[in-house]
Amino acid sequence: MRLIKFECKTAGNKKNFIFGYKADNHKQYAFGYHFPSKSIFFYIEYYRYLPKEFGENERKKFSVVEKTIRGKRARVYVFKKGQLSRKDVESLHVTPELISGFYMARPRECCQLFGKPKRMRVNTAAQLLRGKKILFYTGAGISAAARIPDVRVAKNLTVDFHRPFDDRRLAALVRNPQKFIFSLCVFFISLNKRQPTAAHRALKALALYLNAEILTHNLDDLHEKTGLSPVYVRSPWLKDAFTNGRLKATDIVCAIGLKKDTIGLLHRFKQNNAQGIIIAVNRIQPGYLDRNDIFLQGDIQDIIEDLARIMLKGNLCLE
Image (cartoon, rainbow, N blue to C red; front, side):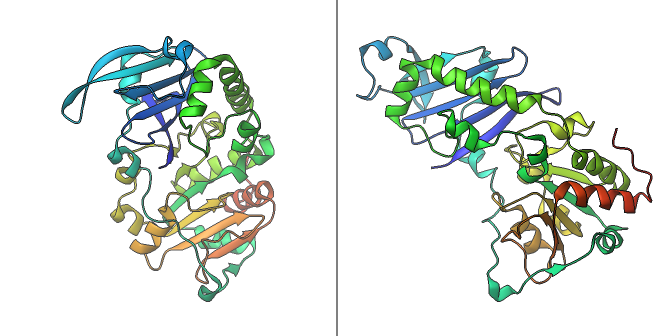
């Protein structure tokens, strides 16, 4: 059982943030923020019957439709709140194939037996990056200076993205949807009011200078606000975007503010390129580095800005 996150796209533009979960063959749900209407939506489906946790008042809020499930026609109970088109609803259906598309390999974790990564000065790292095929991979650390709310903030607002909704929690949501909507509104609106940090702008300059792509774990759109279009790990087509051949051709993955290799991309990178190097920029050493990798420890904002100034020989404008 996994909580999965993905986004729908229309004409290349972000359309929805969707958090979906399929617990079993009996139910699924999805919720998120609808950008065109600037509103929260959520969608719940139960197949064949509603569990005992739903009282009479909650049951009245469901509509009943007939659908084909595993080749058989079945009764489906649907609860929907917010503006969702039929196409949107169809995109919410979670399949095992969709879930598997989020995970490239098991997360990379290195024990002390692999040795400690090399420590390096920023100017030395800049020399190492020159002429190499680079992939920048960003995590929550790069956005911390922008005071981006993380999932812990959402949890305090009664929305726990890491814990699936069981029947009891879904029944409570249907009973009082406004409380849930308010919590999500606070989270998503605060998420999208923030502006890019100096590190985001410096990273844009680096990516353009090195002709490098940016992959991000982050829910925010701070990379887009600098004028770049990153690849999101929430995409179920991630494996198609980063094939084994493409990872083999990559010399260095520069992980910025990334605490863990959640989707296994760094593991897959090392599987396909034994000579490949991971450079981690962070305050605390992450567990995915071994003795062949490099750790740039310190303030992410300062390190990325210094790296860009050195590589661009001082011609860096962060306006």
